[in-house]
Length: 189
Image (cartoon, rainbow, N blue to C red; front, side, top):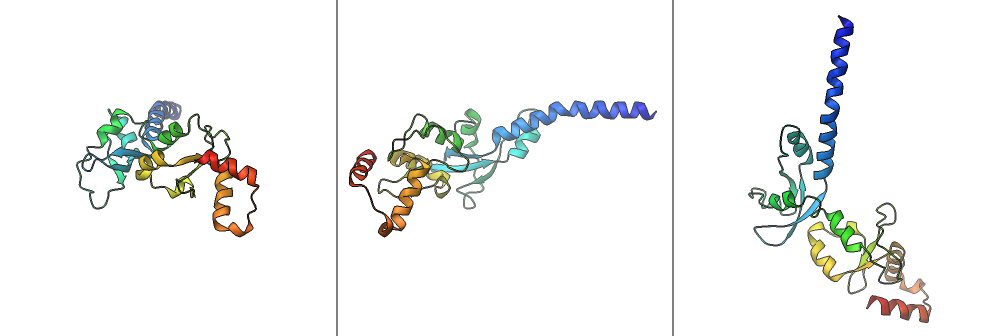
């Protein structure tokens, strides 16, 4: 009797492995910040899906998508969530990290010319520079501002971001090579 019970228990647990795999796959597919165009305002908005709910409902049919957060909340929390159609149509294309990866693809640093197309999202992430030469890390940019930023800012490498940040905060400690400085300024223009 105990052996039979153990056999059924093992078979039951083994039968759950494919379900767990599907749940994890769906969770990973629907997690992350997405940038969509709000149907109400026709402006960019940052949203996050309830990935746990999507994974749980996907186990019993199609994933039921619903928002967990939106940059327009709490003011517009009772909206109809029509923006979900954009995510259903292209779940990967509206991810902020996918948008950034496409923006950096084949790019070089605007200041030093180093290749920044390989996104090292670990310690030394690529950065960006505004038209007025102020540098930013991606954590400083709100996801809903991404379309405007990508249209006007420059791609720069981590080293140039650190150098330009130091230059801005401590100009009295920086001595530039006039020949090298001229070439840096020309590249960023």
